[in-house]
Every structure is written in structure tokens, then in C-alpha cells.
Length: 166
Image (cartoon, rainbow, N blue to C red; front, side, top):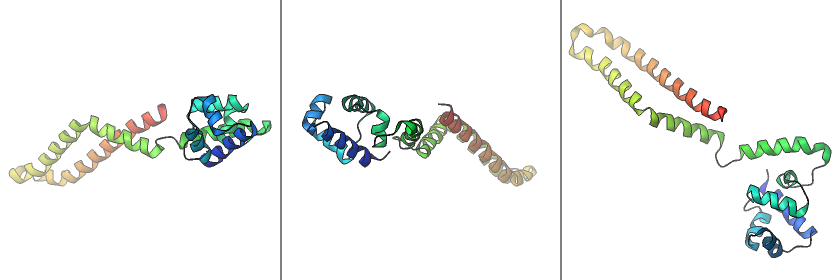
């Protein structure tokens, strides 16, 4: 969704209806400065305002999102495109949400990290203290790799479940 294109379309519709920015703002319950920001593409109306604008100008919300009059034959395809575009350009990107859930999982599982650290330290330090446990040193890197893989896999399962199930 192109904010500037949508803004120009709102401006076009307003002028076509013979309204000033101030008059449109009064009818919608916003200031003329807000209407100006929409038309300049500096600010997008919220979804409720899109509904009111569509009703005011006798166009569809899809037309407003596209920033142009959409022919009936293209309407459904353009609606799908607009929905996907809005989802992708939301407040948080997919990568932001993924990073958020990873961070959340780490916070919720801090005890698991502490236990893993203690066990890894034991694998590394105990062979130095007790001669009979020298073979544990060989397993410390293997344990670290397996522990990291396990924790990372659990974190990704947690994040992906929340990304895709909601």
C-alpha cells in the first residue's frame, strides 16, 4: 500500500466532492491538519477512518487502500493484494515478531540456560579435579554442541508456533 498514492486519491475524492479539507475534517470528526497529513502521505487514516471515508465518498475501502478506482473485474484480486500488503507493512515485520518470540522464549527459559551452564562447567572442571574423569573433557564440546542444538531447536519451535498459529 502506497501512502502517497492513497493520500492523492483521498485528495482527488475530496476535490471531486467539492469539499475543503476543513469541511471533510468536520464531517469525519478530525482536524483539517489531519486531512492534510493523509493527503500528503505523511499519515494514514486508521481502519475506522477508512470506513468513514469510503462511506463519505461512495467508494470501497479497497479503492482507498489501492489509491485508485478498481474495476469490478479486478476487485477481488486487488483486495487480496491489499490485505497481504497491509499485513506485511504492519507495525511489526515478520522478522521483528520472530525476534520478539525468540527473546521471550529466552526470558521464560532462563533457568534452563543456567542448568545447562552448570552442567557444561561440570563437564569441563570435574576432569581437572579428578584424574579418573579425564574422558569427560572429550565430551564437553559434544555436550555443548548438542545442548546448543537442543535449546535452539526448542526456541525455534516456540517462535514458529506463535508466528504461524495466530
